Image 1 (spheres, helix red, strand yellow):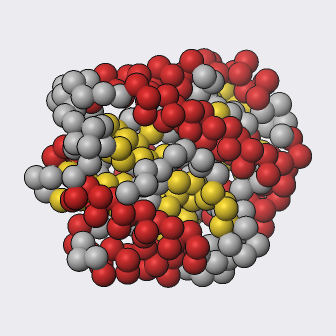
Image 2 (cartoon, helix red, strand yellow):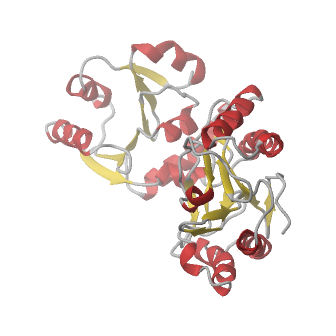
Image 3 (cartoon, helix red, strand yellow):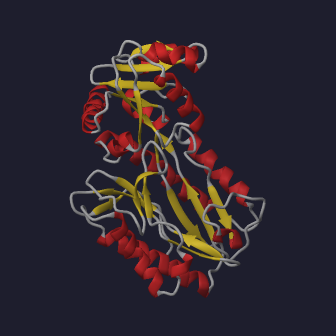
Length: 361
């Protein structure tokens, strides 16, 4: 891991030079872990051309020594007006970048007030997506951890497909999934499990409820596992009992849309083009307005991260990216269908990591 982190720091420092920054203050938890290996819940990285400093409080001092031994450890004591001037006092900075997409306005004001009175004066520069852009291209070891998380999720779906039956509540199904995944190696759930039945399935981000599942209705299940800090994400839609013609048509359309996207996505195209392959299928079937979200998103340390595969996305799909392909159709009063797999962008085409069974209609 040390060599990989060293490589990440080299690439980050190249970005700092390009942006004319003397240092960057990293506060976003996944970015902090990516660059240091420290997974505590509080702390900051201060990275310059030569220095790597990890600032945290008493609770995590010993943890930093184990997880980030090459970082200079700085202990946070008191409020920010007391410790932050000490953190930067010897670094001779002129332009300090901060993660504007993560830091609160209140913290920004505190940092600004401190730096405006510093001698010499230090300019606080907002930057966004600097570390995230590095995280988009996954190293082989990262893909291996995602794959292990996917394997847990695939097995969990196989288990729940055999277990689910009419009369179970959405909450009971969600608990069975979480319990299975935790017992089979998941560190936790990277996001709240979705189990949405009948009309609830028309809500893309429905929460499991006490509603009892009935035969012949759609049940959307969206779940993920986590291994080594890395997430998986899988969606399947099932129909306990006998599926009606509406379910067969909607499911068949979503499956065709997904398979079309998988077959046509190519390295070097943008996320908007990728989204268009699936969207065209759904629009031709007359359900265009019922597909209201993007085709997919990146996944890694966070369950949702760049790149985005959506109608307006201009991000280029590059070898080593891992992202979801998840078209859906949602019909108010009836329900919905979503099918989601994770894919790795290869040198030309994508290959699926997910192996969970899909229905045949």
